[in-house]
Length: 259
Ligand code: NAD
Image (cartoon, rainbow, N blue to C red):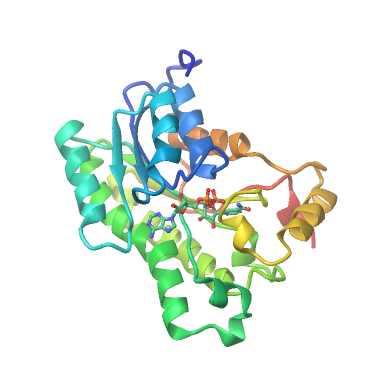
């Protein structure tokens, strides 16, 4: 990676959860905060994922590369133990993960199973709350936390189904955490990107139709890319955004304003 183009996040310690490969939204966030000078801790899901994530971590000069499956007891705690031991503090935490079992994701909300719904909620939403609980004590000097949402949280987007209520819960969780953590000068935002061709998105039925529709409906007339999301995340992490918290930030070319 080239020398950072700005020092606005120099010395800032940033945890990035959710890089699967170079198409991941989390990778865009990692590149953008790195470009503003931040130090990175990056996680990978498991041994199978590591060969795809490790080169990205190297390229970005990450200080830490750690395994993390949020559904495995103790792994999230181990990540924070390492961060505490290495840095002694944390400034920014980016949560960019989601999961739902395929049958539950593609079978319509009406048919979703209790187990599938609970698993989607645990990995895609409650893990953010657990992350916040572990991160907050390391943010003595204030900080910020971000989670990736989608328009389907508040509008019906065909085929988004089960993930709609899960993202609605995630956005509400961000608002409540923003309220609880505001007195500690910790800011919390859901970021809501437009559709992007990533591995997670490939699990949605007719995703290409969603992409085409987004490009047609967006006032800006183009799809977003991971660096658009990354630089929004980076901006929100800077002191320039210090009086912002809690609200959903759309990075979707304006699609969210169209009725
Ligand atoms: P991606 O496949 O690149 O990233 C998803 C990540 O979730 C992967 O790194 C995967 O390892 C991780 N993950 C899944 N289960 C996990 C677990 N148990 N523990 C730890 N990590 C786990 O796809 P993406 O599109 O970059 O997704 C990132 C986030 O952005 C998700 O929350 C997704 O819902 C959201 N989002 C995506 C789009 C889109 O169109 N791609 C739009 C809006 C929001």
